[in-house]
Length: 302
Length: 260
Image 1 (cartoon, chains in turn brown, yellow):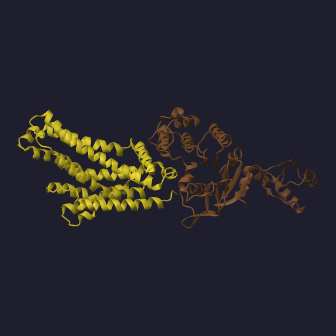
Image 2 (tube, rainbow over the protein chains, first blue to last red; image 1 turned 180 degrees about the vertical axis):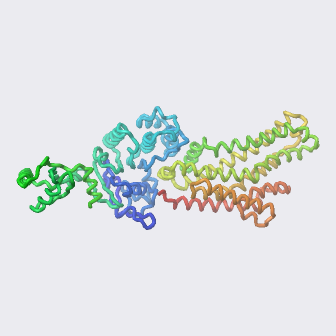
Image 3 (spheres, chains in turn blue, cyan; image 1 turned 180 degrees about the horizontal axis):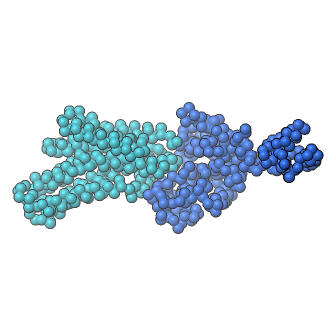
């Protein structure tokens, strides 16, 4: 039996002539929080819509808990709770009525509504029309709707959109709790890596429909080669000087120079060379690229 | 069947505060009340005509049918087909609806059935209120002899025919509202269709029954011509055939519909 909650095999999808998803092979392990990262327009939402069978995928390319989605649409959807793009809520109904309506469709007991409203912090606004909710409140209601069926797999598309810092932390804690205590699998999309790195166990990075990286968060860190960052009085001349000595400059601008870290002794030697050749070194230190930088490097190699 | 029932229940729940639902109750209530009020306040003039009870009833029912039959009912059907679909367009909820573990046919059929149900409620209320308010007029003014004739057969036949004749327009407008999310296209097409239908009937075009928008007007005209006793006539068959075909066409549109 497959240990994967989601598996796509060479999934490609077009909108007209435009290829939106390109040979995508996702592997989302059961019980993981899978951070689905990519800049806006990378194809994340399209992929999520394909996983929900809202967009028709080619046969034998999408599997939910080991079952092909087109042939097992209803069985697959029973296992999925989803929040796609902006939360889809009926503006003329109250938050509570939106949840009751979903209870009717899912055959869930209405008692669950209060539990969900408490969980997402909307108990006080339960009887307010959802159209009058703030973006953050709508997002919370969307999350409550996704959680209502107690599905094994949650697909959350940018769930912290519009939330304040407290709300973001609450959603992050909720995701951790759902996987640890309730054994859920969560696929959460975002264009912000710092948001994902705090909670995800696995990461997939998508750009222009292509999967650029997939693995655990620790594997992503191994891509993260440390660098030496130097601030000197004339960075441009210093960079030219170091290049002439055979050092590979990985990045330089008007403020600093970056080159791959080799050893502390080598770093000391670079410092001495710069000083001996008339440069004033303001600082020289070892830097490990943060994941944000790494994300940008992966999605924009040039 | 279970999926169809819960989808229908959900449609009733989420639409109960919408204008389409309220209109199905308010429309018959307002029109019947106004006609009844006119009969009550203008009783001397009406009673001076010395109508026999059957003719009195026909005048009273005719006043209601004349107002709603050929114009208000088709417009209500057009608006309601728009409203039932627009609730999903406006709130961008098609994606959440089709992401539920429910058969797509059940979701589509429940929406359609809900629209049929609203027309039924509306016409049933017209039927019941016509009957009830007519008898109320007799209680309020004993000179009216509404109690001496029962228009039950006539009323039930004409409202059954109106109900069946509205299904063709409903199916067509349902598809139009399913495809386009804006207000103008369904209402504009419906308005033009309706005018074309009325012209075709009033000018006596022999193939008017080909136009779904003309069916209600044909039913009203048939009443005037005194051939309302028969339920299933050419326009009713045409309406039912249109309804069945367009219902299936709508379903194929739904299953091919991509939520972009």
